Image (cartoon, rainbow, N blue to C red):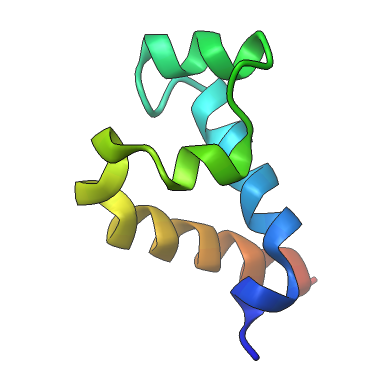
Length: 69
């Protein structure tokens, strides 16, 4: 068990919000905003594969910060 497998929706929501803020480029921002892409699909995008380690780390930090008051 891991925080990722126990809480996949949290990480999917995080990457969607991250994309909506324009952090993954304008095209991805548009697609997420229009509902063409959702969180779990973003993690699998070939153009993001090189960034997965960094994105995963940011998502985990956000998750832990959310748990701590």
